[in-house]
Image (tube, rainbow, N blue to C red; front, side, top):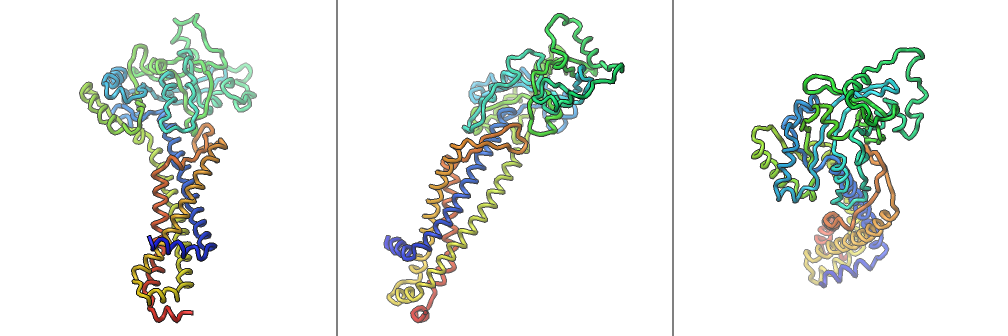
Length: 466
């Protein structure tokens, strides 16, 4: 306690220098905590977005991940509904599952007869009500709006297009700006022949459904897919809107329809296939256990079916790559701030030692041990770092409150809509403790060379120093 008291009084002897050093450390700690809080919220926001669409784990054919995109029909699961029911039949597993829903993804050709346009697309068949429920998941408590899926409570033949698909097919009613649709472009030369192959196939396919409500011509698109029997199958869909998918490649290819309609288009009426069963858990911490439990259940219930359970991190490597990138940036910034803290602390301690060289010789002559001199200067450095770090933590919490209260938004890379810009410092206890320990430890280490030099001074040389 006497050592702390003496170190405190020594720091007060030159308050301006001590205050400048503490403020420098506080600024560095504040910057590091704010970026760390932003990084933590950004990762949580990204994970929430992916989990709301893909879930935490995916049940697929064991070879779908490597080969399924080339032939989704061949690598689909014939007993998709039975697989989903088997998972939900286990009480311990069902209690941890928020949503388990089938999905069907396959390539096709979409045509818009009213504009005589067509293009290859990627059809994503999903259950709208399940997707709406998945959008309510918010384990991390991020400020991400939870909206109902656009296809929810819509007719079975409804479709949602990517903005690029709507633009290239010229489905003008699905776009906010008509000029972006190419509406001024004539659909065909006057008197020219109109190619209605897709439309004719759709009419033949649904000849028995005349009299039912159909989509207006400007909103009706035809989707052609090759069934597992090699026979072309066409269905007409009513486009209810278009939304951005974040990436242009997806925007230019994505067509979202109901799971039942997609299954009927690819496999025919009465089919039960799906390319995946997406499982969303209540708590992401249950993922390792849930994967093991699901694998055991499927191996027991479907021993002859080649099934695999994969996590969302395996299915979407971009997640771990992005987290790794942010961790690398955070580490680099931490290194820069630590270097500034160490340089400032070392400079302050060295200057203090120069000013007190004669004093060091005097107390050594009075019998003070070298180790006590060393401890004294290290204690002063530690107290400076501790004061600056605590001040930086307090300022960070205040700035966190201010930034979050401003309701700022930003558009992340690959994002389809603006996201809230938030910072979490107070909730990231581990990060705060880590930054506090980092600054105190490295500031103390920075003072070691100068403190060692002071403790090794010869008494005679120190007393005659001017």
